[in-house]
Image (cartoon, rainbow, N blue to C red):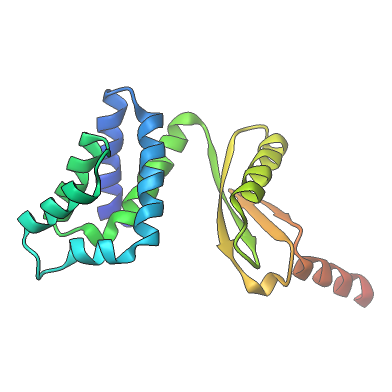
Length: 175
């Protein structure tokens, strides 16, 4: 994460830590991240130099109805400081800070196709049992795996990909 995103994520984290609603805020930021990813034009509008800050603030107020006031104000500050292009990275940074506070390990799961929410939840649960600590995985698409999944958490790699099995067979055959 870049320094700009880190600073804004840390600012929201500090604000929410003081107000004792960190977990609710994390879920709200997760939902906002999904919305912003599904609607990339929203970030384009908030980043536009053709719209005034006042217009952008009105757009935020009209579209983010029901969003926590502190989070909405935080998004307004980011927008006014011309940092809206960093919003997804800032959301990720905040989510990571809260996970660290909660003792949740973050990892990546590589697959050839996007995993469903149910598949990801089951994989999170299984890896959490193996690691003996809560785990949160982010899905990354990697067509080179051919099939299966590969999970990376810190220095642990759980490789159940077809590519890995083929490489194992190749090594075994060359012996």
